[in-house]
Length: 330
Image (cartoon, rainbow, N blue to C red):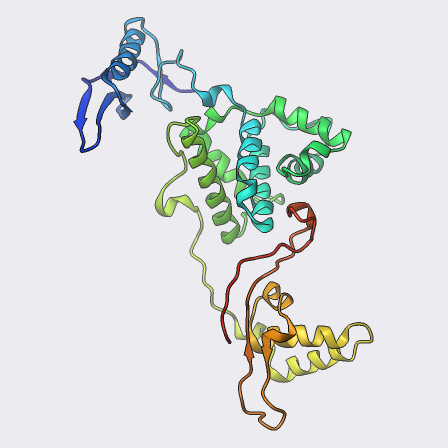
């Protein structure tokens, strides 16, 4: 925690708006400007007075927060693990199964990076599993087995406070850690983008709860930390029509479910829906041309998507979670 005695405190700035008047305390710590708005002048004067008293006592200010060392924020009092669990519970009803699973993955990697020490009595893989499958799953947490509960108690004791996000150097270290795979190589660009997006929403939640003063994640191009990628497909990796027809014919001749799987994969190849959209299709969603009119188009009605994410991530205890309605013809 970097501290400094280089502090300047300015007069309260009064802004009279159309609906209300705002009183803003302004001060500078080690060259960085800070602002704190208040609804009443009394609150603003009280906060400013506390800053002045700290400087009068010769108290150091924390560079990362702009506050005196004695002013402990909510971030310093709350562990990251406890915050992450609270955040999951708050977001759980608003998310679909696949989003819940992705949030759990990102928070697991982040929590591992925010522990005071590495586990010695537990295998690292067991710690990650306990976090991903139990701690960050609102429906399953209370039913965690005894050995999993022991791991989670250890994680809670060894979790750093949320205030580590107020140190910009630590933020960079955390982001580098979650951008790295278990084998030490950098994660894929889409994975890094997903992690930053999920963490960004979590940080905004912390700001709304007044646990953090501001979102500590980088803005703009620096926010993803990803190199440029291309969506171009190498034609050499695609099936040609003859290969596709041969594979589909082989699938159709399978003794168990061959015709059903043939219809499924043929729909994917010739019509291009996502697998979760094709699975949700019904017979009445398909309009085929007559047998004689082989040159006519058919029509598919894609009305919903049912991605498979595992029943532990859904409220219906169904491995497939119902998606959104998306009517379209194709």
